[in-house]
Image (cartoon, rainbow, N blue to C red; front, side, top):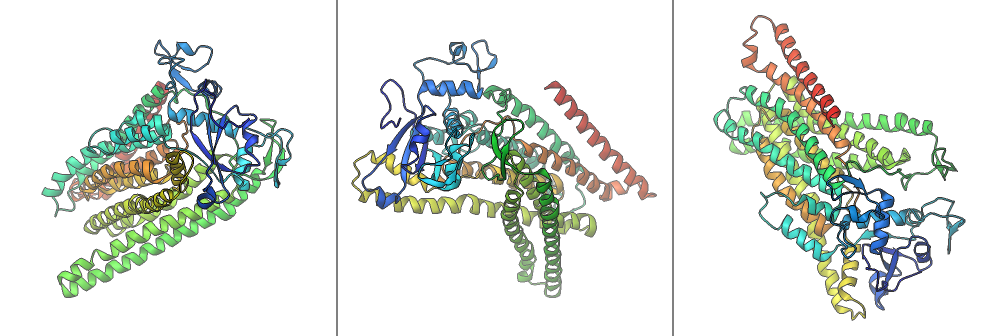
Length: 601
């Protein structure tokens, strides 16, 4: 049944917006017990072409039943965390039959999206009116409609009132205050809230490094070899902050209920394809693709391509060093102020080239990972993150390792680190926040003028909101945001001992990053679908791996310092053995702490 308006006894939650054909709306409304409302306008052909807009929601009772089906965990009156059940709903803290705020907006949105995605074909062999859109028993109707182009978009609408309250308490105020993480979680979901929580935590964790680095920079700036104290502090800092974050993250997600929430069975990703067969685990019909074919694609195509890109990155690095040598020679021969400025040009150009190569490689990595045809979204993300992290690590840090351990030039290392860090931060702020915001503002002005010229016979405010939001960019997830923090963590933890201002610049960048990312989420992109999360996922492993590399790097830098070398004037072998022993003791201590933390949890 199609609801032109909600029944008076059931509140209507305008959560999702669909752009789809009139021929297919009944496929949704007949089985999901959801509420559909068309958003029609006599001028829609002028503004939307042949697209049709439908608002999708659910009654309060339907949302509660969906929460039970999904196993959402809520706090009980006795303080324990249990999976919600409709029968025992009065035992849960904050529940009231007359109160529709028991579930957060993000949870409501997640439930409705889950109901839509779990509408599956039974006896239908195709989408009515679209014979090319084939169906088979158990196939998700929404996914088929999206892949066939019948449904062009599905996205959650912003709640303007709730969004305004969130903005006022988030990025419209003095940036040194804590973020409203619980409110972010209630509006955007746990995945987005965990990112902003980690960004905030990491920013404040950088402050001790910045406080130590500023006087260190002021008093021993010209003495490039006096970095032992700061490198020793790096050894402790880079591991302790990750351990503290894991404990804080677990506490936060336990309070939200996602830490103890049962993991849902993961469905095949939309781009997965193969020969139709029966899944041996679920018993459903779905595409099947042999694992050996996927492995052949990974090892015979993807791996050689990644190695080729790594070689290209190293080749570009050597060109950079040639430019550095040319600029240095020119400055030494002339000694003018202009040639002194020219010394920074190769580093700036190299930093820009690094950013361009990272983005081009990201596109190629996404294409290859999609072509590998992974069944699950988690497998797809893991392979994509591995490809991107390996290339980004080598592309961003290879020159610094070469300068530190091959050339042994600490002055050049300091200059290169400063150039790479500051240039990358400026480029990221412009490309990820300022440019999208400027383009979105221009589009909003143009569409508002168009709306004012129309004399619509509907709720013009809602119609304008839908038309504006459907043209917003789609937020592609926290991948790029975590990647930026990962590289920043690398710059600070690996070599900041020779450039003490690295942490201070990172803190300044992150304070602006909090506000620009918040603005991006609220005003630049469509509201993303919420996803329950219990941690930051594979990024925790990535940061811990960087921490291990930081231990090795800082131990090596300490061993190369003149102060430590003077303690072993007779034998370099003793020096190397001592450095290796300290390094191994530090790594063993980390492993023991991780093991005890896992047993305790």
